[in-house]
Length: 232
Image (tube, rainbow, N blue to C red; front, side, top):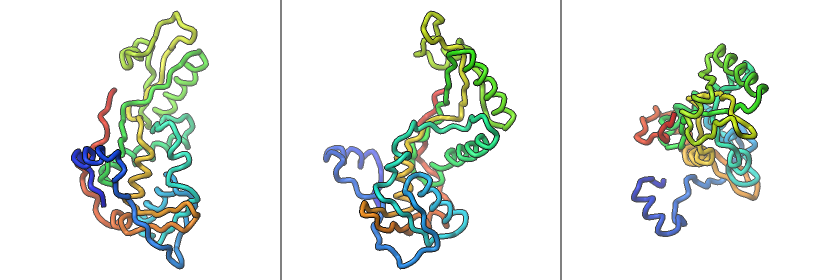
C-alpha cells in the first residue's frame, strides 16, 4: 500500500504524478455474495463500509458501470452542513456531520474536511425571513446556527461587499460554524484504499477486499494527520 509523506509527494511530482500506486486491489469476483450494492459513489462505498463496521457483514460486492465517484460524489459543491429547515432533514444531516467530524481519525486518512463555516447570504426580505426561520428551527433541533447582521458578515468575511449601494445588498446571513467543505473525491479515494473495493468499466462485479474489513474489526488508530484548519 502506498505510504504518503512530503517525500513521496515531492518524488512523484518529478514524474508528473504518473507513478503513484493504486490504492485498491483488483481481486477476482466471488461466486456469490451476502449483499450486492449498486453504485460505487459515496453512498455505495459508505454502505459497504458500515455494513462491515456496524453489522459485521463482510461478504459484499459493489457494482459500478463506470469509475469510482463518477457521479454526484465527484461533481458537487463539496459543502458539508446540517442547518436544514425540516426536522427530518436536520436530524439526518446532523448525524452525517458528526460522522464526518470523526472520520479522519477513524480511517487514519486526511479527508481534507475543513470546518471553516457555511455562510448563506440574504439579499431580500424574503431571504431574511427564511433565514431567521431556519436559524430558529435549527436551534430547536439542537443544531448550531446563527443569524448575522451585515456588519457581522463583513467582520467574518472582509472580502464581501456589504454596501447598501449595490444591486443585491447583503441584508444578513445564516452561519453554521461547524459546517465546511470536504474533498468528496478524497473520501471516495479512502473508501477505495480502506475498503479495497474493485471496479472495472466493463460492468464486472466489484468485490470488497480485506482492508475495509480489517478497519471494521480493528480498533481505530488515532491519526497524526488532521483536516484543514478552521477559519471562522
